[in-house]
Image 1 (cartoon, rainbow, N blue to C red):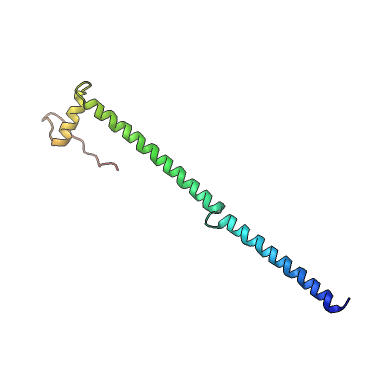
Image 2: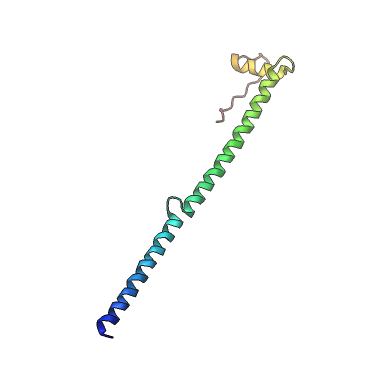
Length: 106
C-alpha cells in the first residue's frame, strides 16, 4: 500500500462522514424549526386553542341573544325585557327614575 492510497481512503471516509453528518443536521434543523417543524406545530396548537376559546365565547353570546329573542315572542313575553329594550331604543325614562350611564363594553 502506498501513501497515496491510504490518504485517499481516509479522505473518502472523511468526505462520506461529513456528507452524512450534514444530511442529519439539515433534516434535524428542518424537523425542529422548519415550516412544518415542531416549533410551527406548537404555535399552530396555540392558535387552535385560542380559536376554540373564541368560538366558545361566541356560542355563549349567541345563546344569550337567542334567549333574549325568545323572551320577545308573544307566547313568552317578558314585560321587563320589553320595557328595557323600548327605553334603550327610544332613549326615554320616567321622571322619578335615576339613570346611571356606563361605557359600552366591547
